[in-house]
Length: 256
Image (cartoon, rainbow, N blue to C red; front, side, top):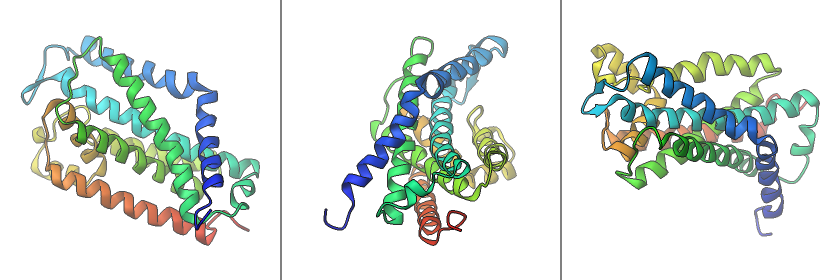
């Protein structure tokens, strides 16, 4: 229909969504349990209920970061597992053979990851509401950073999945790229408490901006420039989109 394969695009997107809906206990319920355990550890074991970070109670400061981490990790897991499993099982050809452009492949698979990430973020936020009060300070920032965080990790998952030849490779991307960037992004602390050199390093981490932007949307507190955060998220996503479409178009590690 026109220049876009709308039927194929919708079908591929539905396939990606149904993949994680079919195992919802693993993809939607498990992140809630993990996040609540993080919250319990900081609130009970580490005395987070009485600490203040900046002008916020620690748990209110922490909660948006936990939501973004859940969004990011699940968006990445959805797209990376889709690509790696298809390659290992040898059925990646079923995705590559239909008349899709590289942009259509990227869009459909990435939107599947975005859908999972946003759904997980909503469920996790709802689960934490009885324990930590959350408000809406700037809805636009919440929507923008939740979507862009999901998109960024979805695209990173596609790129990592295409690059990986086995599950060990994608595990390496998770352990040595995604997890360090997430934990060093100001999720559990304010970067304003760090030495100057560490603050500069934090501002080079795109994960910092997605957490800081959503935290501002919920609490009104931000450690960095909001304009820089919006621009950084857009720029990183544009670069990752260009990378993944090139991978699909060139057949990098996809075609013999």
